[in-house]
Length: 366
Ligand SMILES: *[C@@H]1O[C@H](CO)[C@@H](O)[C@H](O)[C@H]1NC(C)=O
Image (tube, rainbow, N blue to C red; front, side, top):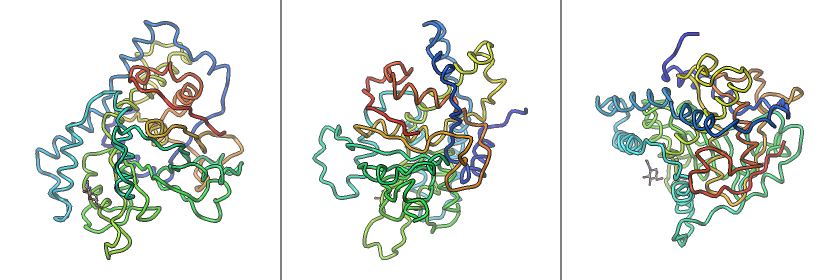
């Protein structure tokens, strides 16, 4: 297969993201998962080194730098131009790998949400987390159980890429409450056409904050429009913030998933991990939105429950679409191995184990 640039990767997500949100191939062979431990420390160090190479992210950053230097965000509607440029510049300035970002997620995500809700900022040391969070993926397996009330019983309910909730058809299975919408910026952009000053990107209404992963620097235009958008034009209540994921969190997620993918490749093919690129095009490879939502939740919650991640032969790919296939730009099996570790031996997870951050208990409902 031909190599594509990450821009292509972004466009491809743009086309399919609405349909493909979360899916996990969890036709689990437990035997395979049981052998997940690295063979030895040398091998582990090699995998960690290889995992650090991320040509897709490097290309996105380079393109974003060009946008800024060439003043190309001038395509933005006048009212949003300055905000978009500021957002892009700030985001570029934060691009680095630093797993200690885990300890800052309360500050980066929860605090702006609390401030918006008028919660007094007495969380001086920034350590007060949500008592419990439900991260709701979009797998069709949700329809096989009735976890709606259980999901809604969490303090914060996170949903991914604007999957439907609060609709009578699905309430029993997915709940009705949404406290945070995690979307990748391709999805956000679809809701907010570039070049238009007005847009509406809030699938769950004005009051629900959005956390968005920027898959392209150009999307800061849509971000500015999205953040400013609200149903009520009266401006009585400011809409909830649209928060951009910290690039250090993006880099951490990328490294973790690539590590698990490399390890799986070497184990299953018996080939050297260096040959991973034969199976996964590096320019295309990406962690899933669901994976990042889980890691973000682990940073801001005392307890995390995860629903709707997984696959079953009898279940639909998504609870809300008829889509059959899944994207090869993700390695869901690798992400699944990461989740197993998150549940059962979080202290073993590379990069996170060096973050100085203590992971909360995470439970997957399958
Ligand atoms: C987002 O909107 C809020 C008002 O609703 C504003 O205070 C904030 O500065 C905006 N942020 C960005 C990055 O545009």
